[in-house]
Length: 281
Image (cartoon, rainbow, N blue to C red; front, side, top):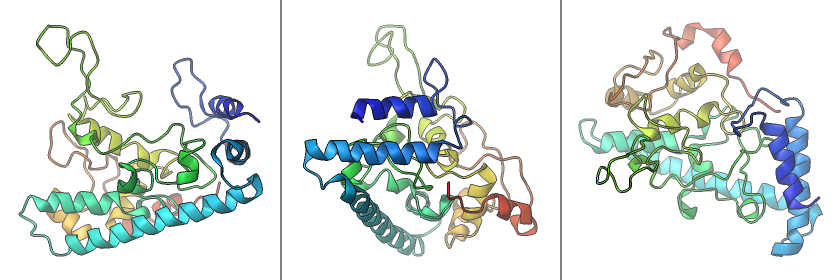
């Protein structure tokens, strides 16, 4: 199957609106098989062009490279945890330390195997780090490894410097007039208008995206944070403990705090543990 047909297959499987907005509710039962077939076919077709191993070895090569990225993320997580254990809570570095442990923590994904850094590895400019995928289909696998992202991961290197989405119309008001400035994601859907920060809006997307970290609801992310060794630092730096969640206000300091309506202790909520269990398809 030509690569362009693979792209068409992905589009038909994952998009159902004229604007191209992702719709995850449809074709859910067929998605894993469709993606696996598309990926393996694409790798086989592309191997003739980029010099990779034959198609029968592509899956083994892919798994090896995924394992290499996972190992690199694990190494960086250990370093981040070590740094966080010695940081002075009142220092500016405390917030940096919290950000690092969150960024490299694979346990925040549904199958405890995909950190934010898995698709934004520093070695490749905070983009995807799986070489075989970068040279072929570019769509990265998520926590459920048979699900692939809809687009190539954008670099996260400068995401925090992007202002809220705006459209200046007066000359001299911004670097350009009658143009869009700011926002995150390729389609700038993380506008930052609600939280005052596009990076905060972007950070709320991946943990719940079925093709990325694949948590079923925000409460699952909060529960995972409450189980991690940096929970104490998280609470000291950002305020309420992760098991006591609040809705962020516009312009508030902990902009990436998870929004949820649940306000009880997760230790007394067995249904939450069941709802946040592993996924295989």
